[in-house]
Image 1: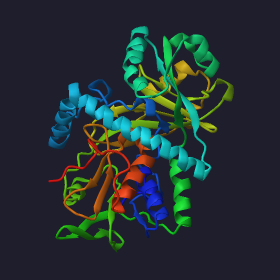
Image 2: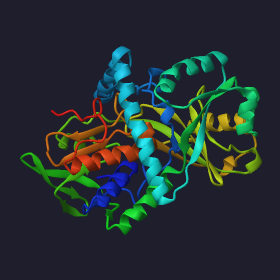
Image 3: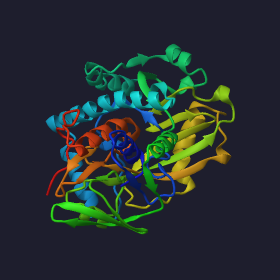
Length: 392
């Protein structure tokens, strides 16, 4: 259930293991929701739990579901709880990074190595360098760069705006939606069936097992089910037999044609001061930003993209064509810990691969391998402490 990064990669590993696989999704094409408009940065070296500063203000209207999520997030943000979440997130991201490298090599899919993390304030840069000590101790390569080294990597970057940067040479970036669709084509070649434009309405259990799912186009019966959905409607979540702590965090994404390649970025980067990310994707530039609690709506207006465009104008003047920007709002499926959930709940044949959130591209290959092993009745390939679904 679900044809985004989580669902398609899970289908791939299940099919490779010899399972007969069907993928169901309400969108007309795979990778069309949260997986479509993201920046495509595999920021393995930045697998920090989100802080309060990185999440926008909540909605003004009272939403009990959001406030419960928020309280859980605050409890898990400090002290030993933060360290446990960090260790779980790093454990998964490190495993997934290696799995993704093996997968893209098998597909012949190109990722660009090296990601810059830009800072406009010297104190902010130093604080980020100190924070990164924990990641360097865990084996991630992170370098602190001043203007000459930054210019060598990014000759078009307007350095007067910056105090410096961190550079992660092993972090990567690419087109997540294109990856998803390339992999889906290989899944089809292995016999995987995709039932698209087919919304899931309900699940039908018998005792402790799921018998079938009910969709708009009929019923689908199977021996095993994987919930790899992103943001789910409350009614469906309540039928899944366990607590599903996923809430949408809204962000904005724009894809712009590159007008002058000499003025455009060469590497993916994040303006950490403004929390805006961008990645060159062939002849286009993808830019994303924003983290708002706005419920389940995906509406947007031009003002929502003003900060994204202003950042690009400051850092890479003249690089892109703003008049032909394609804009959309995205919903990141986030858990309070900003880590995904695996395993089974009440139903013995319903496995979860949910909550990949803002690191879906970074986590999807490892998350899918884990899920495929669990479905096969094998032990997980990494310790799932802090990553398991909670049973009722």
